[in-house]
Length: 416
Image 1 (cartoon, rainbow, N blue to C red):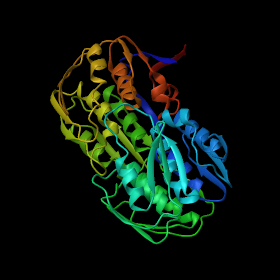
Image 2 (cartoon, helix red, strand yellow):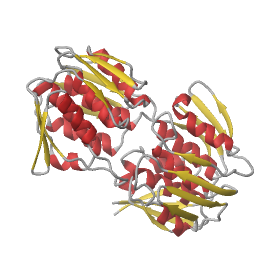
Image 3 (spheres, rainbow, N blue to C red):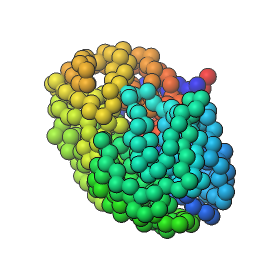
Image 4 (spheres, one colour):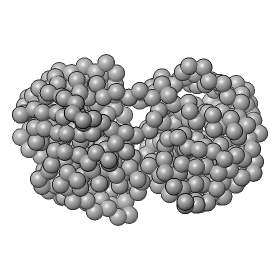
C-alpha cells in the first residue's frame, strides 16, 4: 500500500506531457485477441490497469512484452476462460467476452470489479450478445457465453454505454453478416478502436457517431497502432494548475477531446490558449462559480466530476454539479470535508460554497478519480496532507507524484 505526502499551497508551473489514454489502450489490447500475429502498440501508459490487462491476456494465451510505453503482443491460439482474480480487480476485463465469443464461440468470464462509483450493470453487453445469437448463463459467479457463430443484428442500446459499444463492436467484426449498433457511445476512444480493427482487416464505420455499422469478416490479422492521449489525465493536470493559482502548458493533448472542460474553466475565468496539440492555461485573480451536469461524450465527462468539484472549493460563490452517469460518485466529498470544504450533497447534485481556505488532513482515496481529486485538494490546502489509497490512483495515472514534482509540487510517495 502506498501514500502520498503532500505539502500544499505550492503554485504549479511548467509543462506536462500527457500519456496515452487508459480507456483506449486497455481495449486495443483486448481487440488483439481477435487477430493473429504480432501487434505493436505505442504510447501505452505505464499504469497498473495496463499491467492487469496484460496478465489477463497472458492467461488467455497471448505473449505480452511492455517497456517504456511500447507494447508488443503476439497472438496465435487463445483460451476462453479468464483468470478470475485479475478480472475481478478491473472492470475493463469484461471486454474480452466479445472477442472470445467471436473467435472461439464461447467465453467464461468472472463478474468484473473496478471502482465502486455506482450501478454499472452488464445487461446492455449481454443483451447485445444474445441478439447476435449467444446464450448467456451464470455459473459460480461467472458469465458463460456460448455461440457456435455469432450473426449480425440490429441492436439499439437503451443507454450509450461505452463498454457495451466496444464489446459488441469487437464481437461483430467476425460475426456472419452485418451488425448495426444504434444509440452507440461516441467517445474518442471508440474511434481509436475502430481504426485499429480496420487496420486488422475489419469493416467498421460510424465510430464517433450514434450509429456504428460492422460487416463481419472471416478472420483478422495483426496491426501497429499509437494510442491517443488521455483526455482525463489532461483535464486533471489542467485543474491542478488552476487550483494552485498557477499556469502552465499541457502537451500531447487533443483539445477537441476536452472541449466541455475548456468551455467550463474559461467561463470560470481561466486564461486559455489552445493550439493543435497543446493547451496553455493561466489562473485568474478570482475563479467564478459554475453549474454543470455530467453526460456521455461529448458532454462534460463524469471522470472529471470529482476534480472539478474540488476546484469549486476555490471559486468565489456557490457552484452546483449534477451527476447524471453514476449514482454513487460523491463518496470523495466526505474526504474533502476533512480539508474544510463546504459541500452539500443532495441525491445526484453537489453544492459547493467557495472560496474555502483548505487545511491539510489525512485523506483516503476510495476510487481512481476520487484519488486524483483528493490530491488536488491537498495541493491547494495549507500545511501537510496524507493521501492514502494511492493504489487506486496508480490504476489510471502514470507516476503522478513525479509529474507533479516536475511542476513544482511537493509530493512524496511512501510505501507500506
